[in-house]
Image (cartoon, rainbow, N blue to C red; front, side, top):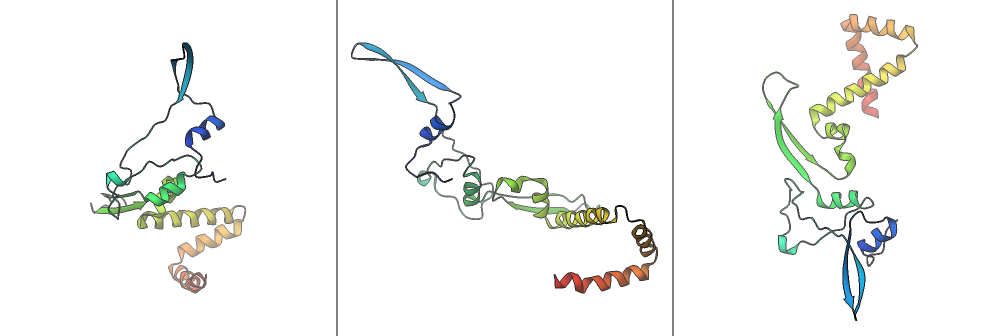
Length: 173
């Protein structure tokens, strides 16, 4: 549920949960002492964009943004944090480097599967793993399928014909 723009973060916190840090001080007002409680508000200035594609806004022009569990993905999508680097390619033993370019739009983009989908060689391995997992669940309890698959793997000509016949069906989807 969206909150009105004029509602402050302090009022939201006070209404929804007690603050973990309470700052109190004594004030003398017209000869009597009174305890005043201040909310603990923290502002963080950090460069969290990584390697942005666009030049970031000048520091003087930046403003504080309220980030909470309700708007985290929206803020991340607008900031477009990005990481670009090269890593050793352990998929090939040739000692080559693999370029990785990751742009994050939500907290879900940090999950291992989402990261693998953004790097093409890893995405291919993930798809193959998913297909093998689907095949394994399909074959569960079907003894005839296991024998048929073993025969297909032993006969290269049969395997090639099966692959060739399945390509048009895959392209139609």
